[in-house]
Amino acid sequence: MEKVVEFGSILQNNKTLGIFNLNRIKRVETPSNIITNNVRRIDARENAFSKAIRGDYGPAVQKEAHRPSQKYPLNVSLTDIRQPVGTIIPNTVAGKIAPIPTDSYTLTRHIKRLGYFLTADIMSVCNLPEYAVYSHDMQGHSIDIDYPFAIVIVMAKEYETAAASNGFDWINTALSYNLYLRLAVISQTIANYIRRLGYRASAEHTGKAPGGPSVLFAPLLLWSGIGEVSRAGIILNPYLGMNFKAAVVLTDMPLITDKPIDFGLQDFCTNCRICAEYCPGSAISKGEKVMYNGYETWKLDVQCCHTFRILNQKGSYCGRCIKVCPWTKPNTRFHNIIRWSVQRSRLARRIAIKTSKMLKPEKAMKEEKWWFDLEEVDGELIVP
Image (cartoon, rainbow, N blue to C red; front, side, top):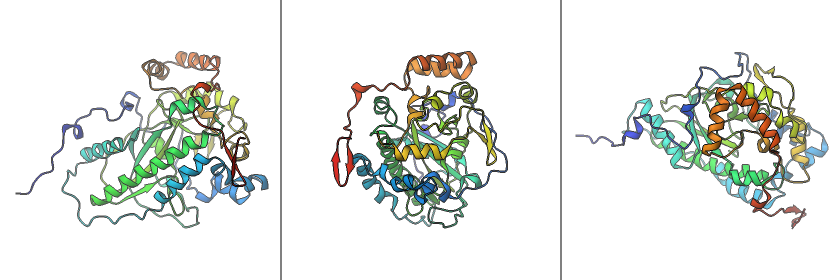
């Protein structure tokens, strides 16, 4: 008699997985911003970093385009470790599906729990819309993939370090690069594992070689219920704000998708302009949402944003909008009560916005600063 694999009730009940209970957030059928059927696929070579390197933003930006990732020693260290992970050759898909349950609910719970085991902060699943797939990669190769599902993996930046930063100083890039490394490892591990179970899977993460990731993360964050579109043009999560990074695993393993969420952010951002007021590059719109490429959004001035980030002489890149956002708060009982209130009351949103301005959101907790401000110049580290 063939043995049957054993597992606990955790894979068949509805117990919350992870520390952030997104089941408390209102679920909706479609994202809270308008998305039409006219969204076209984007060429990866048209993103801001490619344009900067190509010279579209001027010679000064082109000259310094690679500099931010190289001028701070911790950035280089994290990149040195991440790059080999991005070049790992995928293992082949097993010729036979493993003797495990085949129902979508159990498999979805299993993969999400695996993500939390690997230290992800939020795991979610959605269908893969065609427009979320780049038309061409960074090397100009056309992209043609047919995976039905996207497993979205989210990790939060360390709050204490982010709180000690002013948002555009020397540690800013390392906050992101730390997660790029960890997300590369997690997504590669999950994809490798799924292939060993007999299903197709592809890890999509920042630093994937060659050509970079095959998909845009933003629409997948929307459709999987991670967050809503914010005034800064970044997806915002009710627990993490914009203070997170993501990776994706595409697969044909039969999974159950999550629905988008609506926690009142469109109304909140319409009345809150804190990120725009504090943006050092004046790149964030203070006006209303517009239709762009078939979807509704606050349109970021990408050239202004990346010009400031690349030419920033007081640090490495910029995340000022994330720093000052009222939603960038720790996961405490007090702040969760505020989150609960803001989701349900327009008055609570107005009070939260006014209070955030009074509390000086740009303030850095200097007593928590643990890093050294150092800049590499001509092969030597100096104090900038």
